[in-house]
Length: 483
Image 1 (cartoon, one colour):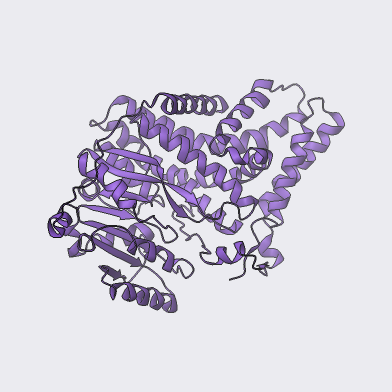
Image 2 (cartoon, rainbow, N blue to C red):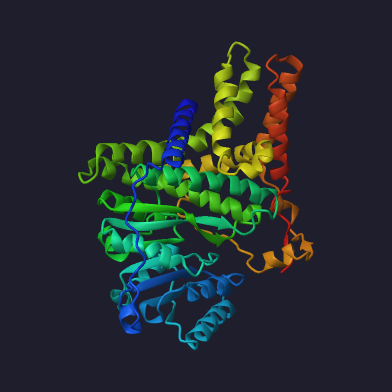
């Protein structure tokens, strides 16, 4: 499994080098939409665009997202802003509705939509939003989660790819994190996600193999979305589900790394754990549901099917999580008790080092934090591995959906020197049993290796056990801006 992951990382590294050096990716047609001195004729050259903002009790960020969407540079009679509010708090729901009314009074075509239940969570809200009669007037739909703030020229830079290339279904933009420097935990998240956006998404797009929709900061051709079957809530990764189905219909996707949309990383460890559970469990569950459908598909090439099943799903969504935890946190430490078992240096040191360096290329400014990133990722790999098996086996928490907590304007208070607060959390709420257990196991292995071993694994084992203990006692991601 380590070799599989190594080959995958090297392959993507080679492709991204070729793309950057030789500009080998396909050039899709892009021309600015027609301008005309006659205002009415000029506006008619712009397609109708629906902008969807799904939200759920987003007290801290609803004004940011609605304001950014209403500030998009697009003819006011050719755009509809649709706020899909699933809030259960009546106070927050009223605040969102008042904000929509405020923008509506300024001449913005904004619709405030609610529903009677939260069936299907985000997928259910998006699906319900597409049923309104005015949606039939629209050609494209842009989707932004509640903490995303697109620049005013977002539509002007993305829509032409869809307007001039009829075989393109999706244009995906890159995420830019407004709170990456908030703490060490957000810096670790930035390193992982930058690799995803700068390498994985870029490689999938440039080789025309496949890349997944990130659920936000993207624009869909509505006809392609409908042809693929629309939104489905069978997994917690409705965005990836839709992208796979659209890809199997033969539609193409365009990824634009130069277009960045501001958003927020989870600031607390609790929020991050819930997010990572969803992002690990959902793809594994989707893989189980769609593997045979991908194999039987007759519209796409054998290469694309192989890329989807082996590279996109199996290696990145399953092997990457399992090998990180099982090999580096269970098997390798256990070898100190069995001196007859010798893990070759290429397997224990060289391959992991190369994989780590290739993962870190997306965030060169954080190279000095590489050791912290490795230790933190190994801790998180335990949760991801557990979530992966829950998805594959469709166990109890397979459809668990907890909305990621956001801080919004509270982040600005922190950057301006405002005090931080440490939320009062009971000891039982802060302690994480499995992290403490794995930390104790690694510490014991380290002590044994220090006393009897010859491989000097104890250096790594002690560092990794400390990382598990720090997380286990809840001393990570607990300071948040005082809002």
